[in-house]
Length: 401
Image 1 (cartoon, helix red, strand yellow):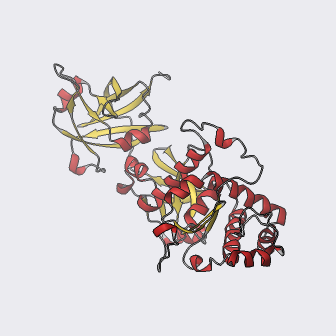
Image 2 (cartoon, rainbow, N blue to C red):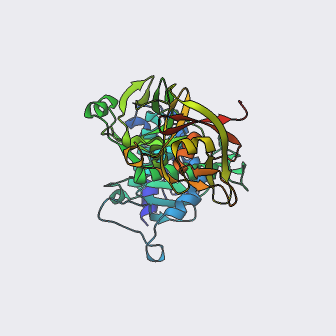
Image 3 (cartoon, rainbow, N blue to C red):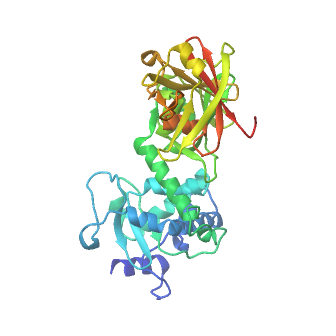
């Protein structure tokens, strides 16, 4: 059997101490060879590879679920570059999958590995895969040797038990992050950047960044931080050519498609600044109304003041374009009846809040509510004012009022 031959070649023994005949990335000979070809010491490589394999074991159920298999578990081989995970080999201890580059990089990002550590674990996977005779599956992509059970003791011990019966377990978090990154790569909003910016980044391959957003001195601001960690971080991808993929819901919520973005670097972060108007001080006749989340329709509804709607001749059934502008350190909501002139594609219908009432409202677009952070079920208000023939609102968080 090919694996017996390979095992003897790499380990110099035919003992039955191994759980699987497949040469694994954490095997001592593979670690030694990886260290010789990289910048890290043997101990550093071994630590990185073992940590990586542990998380791979935690993610095994997710990877197994996504792996495409041929008839009766046969290998799936594609002539072109695989766009999905596919099973290369499997036994009781390990699942080997092809088309795995995105997952390898996602797991390395999850572990907040340095570039050197990421290269080491990727190289160890390739060396092990080559030793096992899987070279043909690395022509267009990478192979991942996924252990089915943890083999090593480390700081990750016990993590899989945290929230094991709920939604906060480490495996669930890892799964969500992997799926989020894949979603960004496949369906995220692409921001084209100047050629010189891509050259300035000097990326040999794509890089995963934590995405944050806010306002800064009258401008909307995007930050992509390569060191951002934590389970609640939203992620984007910067391609080697400098183009940036961000979650579509963030792009829609900020109206990025309709804004000019100036790109730069600050303290190791990639920063995009969008200067396109501010709420300003010319807002008059402010009135507070309710901002309520409808648990049935799962929509956040902003009530409108009767005095405002009468002054602006806004009625039930009318349409308003809704978008965000900087409002100090927060976002301001602009609702304008000039639908076709507004810098947004987000259009809502004015509704009555209920039968027998005269108060009207509209449902905030889901992406706008997400960016504002008002879709969490907490009670808030909106302080609406009139600016010309538009409504401008500031979210009032009752715990600060």
